[in-house]
Length: 230
Length: 280
Image (cartoon, rainbow over all chains, first blue to last red; front, side, top):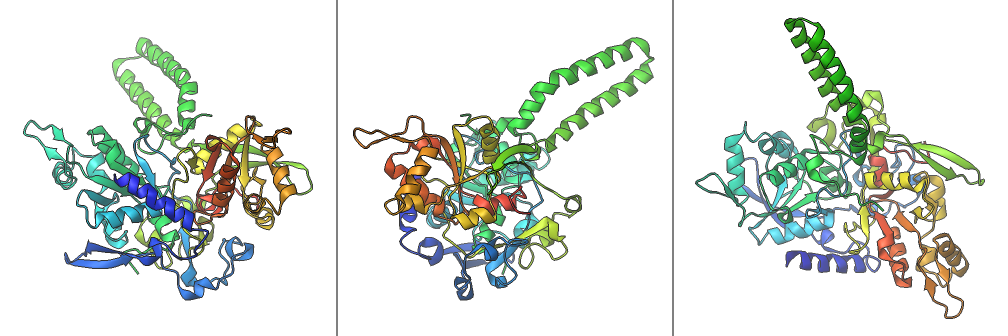
């Protein structure tokens, strides 16, 4: 049901792209509630932010691809810099039943998530990374709690409950109410989300309930999207 | 064509590319044989204490050989790509992920990766790059159910197979000046507007169709796609819709979607992954 509405939604976006510049739900913004470090609930509008001055930047070779790529003349507000030498490149698909998401699919998911408790956006990185900068509305479940679940028994069980997994008295797991989740980490070269997905598959989490945002924080920011840090 | 879905069960700590698997299948019998020979010799000839010592060495060697293979992904394999330069001369380029030594020492933490305009000023210039993040429109991951979306590794695998398979083609859909300036080595230029506005670019369009292995039936003016090539199309980035309008036009004329792959990431993702391009 969700997948169908999502694909219709994306198809209509795709068709409307040639017609309209800067329209679409990534510009309108989606109001997202999230917990701050102080434990209070805050609301933020998640959208693609394109400052006025950036709309005037001409798009040509010397602006986009010179030297270290973006031209020095491009205002700082319109460009960003990434470490391109870390991690290991990851394939596009991890598992035939796990959909790989892009920015628009993540946004559509965040939008649905606001009124559907069975959906959850998960940041698979360690807590200090999550606290520093993440996608608004994401919940932190550090990958090592899953990968090294013997050593993090308490955290692991707590997170399973958050995911809607019922732990039976005989220690077996009931996934009938398992949430639909989107997992991400630092970038398309970051394997923490992969390690978490692998651990979830091992314990029997239904693959159809997992989505992977391969692009992660880097690709999110490279699209000019809202994050929890200014 | 081989599908690039990697079974996650095969992933060790990081990802296991088909190259790892190939490496193991080729060298593993050899390595185990070597260790077996060593092991039996030691068992026969030496005292118990020495035997234990050698056993530990063998085990640690085995383990470290497993760790070493981690570097051997498709992106580190130095794939030689045949290209034709503007003068029509054949040139070979080696495609790989280029990670300077100095970058291997950059610590990976919040302040290095995500401060201010993201990469820290302390990160050496060669390890980072800057992108305009306010252009274009973000595109969905999937364009059509029969068109496979490719990432960097899938493109690399495609390019590798393309070297010995004439029915495969990597296509840069940008206009010619963009293609000339910087592209993925081995890519052929087919500007999107020749397809989108095919009425006005009749000559170029027909020329491209022939290159794509599409022939016209003389009697009824229809197109024959039986020999159509398997193509991977890209443009400037995941926000660049030139490749999308080219794909749209190809679908309109009846090009089989199974023979089209889309590298959504385009030039930007390619460079963000530190991969070889045609300009230094």
